[in-house]
Length: 290
Image (cartoon, rainbow, N blue to C red; front, side, top):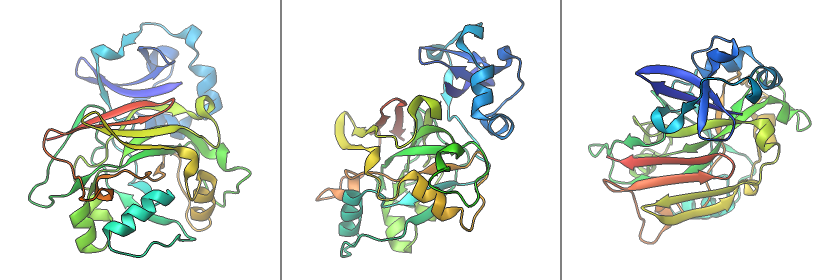
């Protein structure tokens, strides 16, 4: 299953799809949810599989006829992010910051404000009064389907509702000058997400998915999601030792090498640039710099 938030005839609708070019208003399956937050908090993935069955689908809506919003336009909390979680990206990051590379034993966490999350085809503002060094980061996003506390590696995957694509847009000069991530990664429009949430059963545990990013058609990032330094069970086990992660939590798992700051000289985004993030089995997420 694929869950979309769409705008149809100026009305926001939560819709479900089954891998083709049509989606279906979830209300036609006899449930009443207007957003993914409510659905995830109420239904388990198994219940979703029972309710949203393709043979029960009716009144298809062509995706080409509607505006696709972020699957969770207004997350209940900030997106939780993992920094430098691919070895080659860690190296290019430390090179940009003029630091000696060392592989950290502990994950680096930060949060990213969304108000709202940007969407497929969305415009990213230049924010030229604050930054001259906007960068892209294609990442696998993980959506929790139930509250998580004291998670073990053995039960970690039971907590995953599904996966999406996140582009962790970053103002590198703000990030570097202030010595912290939050502000430079949380400017308005800096969290494109989508185009949908693909449920866990379609992709499974230990996903080894192709992850790519193109800028104006040029392939910049090209890796696979099984090369994480700290994998998804590691992240959940680590954080939930001291933090209860609620159902609906969104985790961006880190980006591979090939970001703009990794080039010599760096290649930051400019006005009218088109960024396409692509993850196997999920789709593409396109953004345009204002």
